[in-house]
Image (cartoon, rainbow, N blue to C red; front, side, top):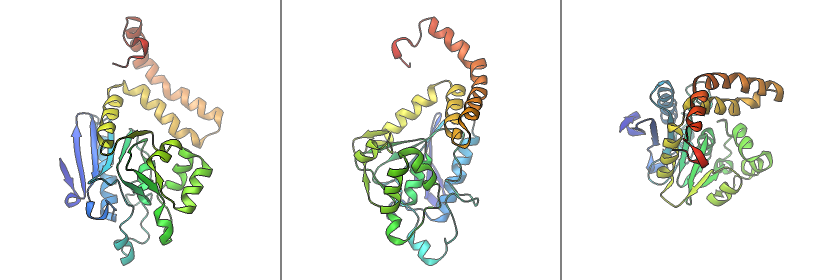
Length: 258
């Protein structure tokens, strides 16, 4: 276990899977500026590590993240700092590798932004999502107003963004915000299982499909498809031919992924 920022962020490496934990349980893992910038740095190092394939973001002690540290905001020390800003904002850009969220308890306000920054969300039955900063007059300059509508649709996103109401785990799964729903206390274990599954696939094809899905929003449909085709060429040339040969030889039949 590696401790960053005096233990505010923990990093654990399990083979190709990196687990990043926000460790401020006394404030339900609300993040001060130092924690957010540390998350940026830890994920930048993960992205640069050729041996690391999939990351998991979670929170300590039964909470994901309660958003920004309100005590720091009230003091004026964090005014003007944006979680999606250029000053080492953790949610500014998506990484080139998958990141999964393992959500127990509250993922609210800017904590929701962290959750939707991730590729997928594995939520336990205790999970609660919401824009709780609505009641305090807090805006969401953290990527959430862009990413949330792309995940759940504009109408549902506006419902969450404007009312600030809590969305429990079952509703989150129903609207596509939570991808996997597991019993209380099981989010991290389920996310680890999923992460190792993703890490075990041939990476080039999976990552090219992922990159196309993420970037296609920026282009007209025809151009997005052209970029999809171009991005897949390396996988066709370097992985798919040999993979097809393995299938012809009997591997992977009947939907088996081992």
